[in-house]
Length: 267
Image 1 (cartoon, rainbow, N blue to C red):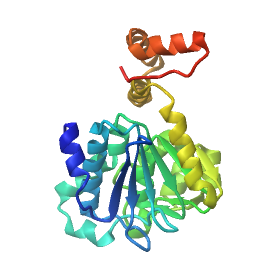
Image 2: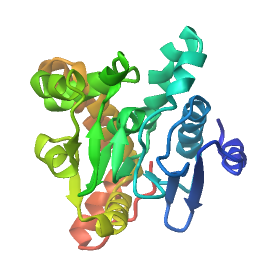
Image 3: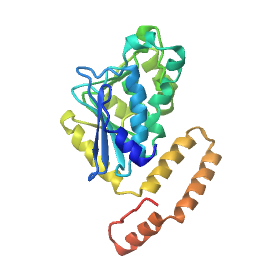
Image 4: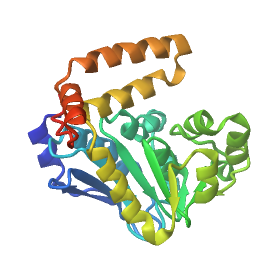
């Protein structure tokens, strides 16, 4: 999707969420808004993927924020929709939910209240999870005679290990935002009335860095998740070497020696 097509697409009406682009602040928000629990429909999953791809192509966006209206992030997916969808469609759900991870730009999710099922899976696919103290994370699919189907157990196990993942998945246990921070799921856990300010602070922090270095770091870290240590170190060296010839690296070095703020251009 090219940048002009992306910008036109983002003016569309979406199912259960809205998109807001702040070009001056280089921030885009995807806002879940299906009160009272922000249930995520089957159609909405496809649209969310398309929106992440469009925002990735948007020239004015540096950081993407996934958040919600109301006291809950999302209670999960539309249960009835699973029975109505074809097996082929259901088998591709994880691909849609992985859109934040595929996005080359940093993606922050701001969680509060219920963050269950696909709401949690979407959050796990983001780069940074800021939880409020009201957050409750859960993968409750065992209550339906099912398992997470959009990467939830797989991503969670990478973060917290097999024992804690079995505790959450096989027992459908909920954990708080504070516990998620302790276990390494959340990047931060803040008071509920500080969630928006903490999110903006992280947006501002990420905007200070080189877009090229940010893209490179995200891709490198994601790709090295399953790589042997020797391969991961080799890939890191290749990426470092490529960045060494970039305009942003030259600007960073010059700014450092001049004791001024770097003005990165993204190439």
